[in-house]
Image 1 (tube, rainbow, N blue to C red):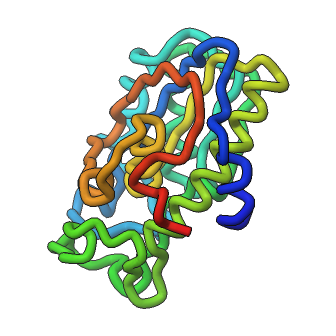
Image 2 (image 1 turned 30 degrees about the vertical axis):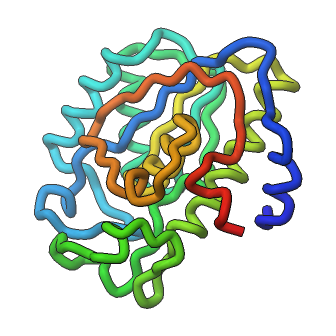
Length: 213
């Protein structure tokens, strides 16, 4: 979906007849997380500790969701699978969506974590060499949420579970909470295997993205 299409769809907020439970989880600890390396689009495995985290996460979830989503990256899928199995959670339908993938970080992938001034300044257009900007991540997350909002409106979906990654989760939380400041959004941090629970009643373009087209 192009930015032009997104702005057209969100010219007025998409308002739901009643609020929806949207539960968002970050994948459990991976081998690169344990080594404090930048992962990005690398496809890496969970550690043993990560697998235990995912199992414990299942006990924090609700008993039933109508739909669930994960990215195409193994750590997202594996976390969701273990959480559902261990917690005896029922998810009627699970979909894999590449728009939920972690952002591509190009030359930074596999490096030790280090301070990047452009991120600290909230520069949505900055992208490392061969990588992806937060502006592009925002575009695909908004496109995903528009499609999800259509499901809520057309199929009466009201319980949603999403297994995601740090970068896209920052953007999604910024949208769901209607945040104003891009540097604040890009500075959000979520521990592995944390569950965030939202009561979602409408989708609109948040202030931090209103100048992104």
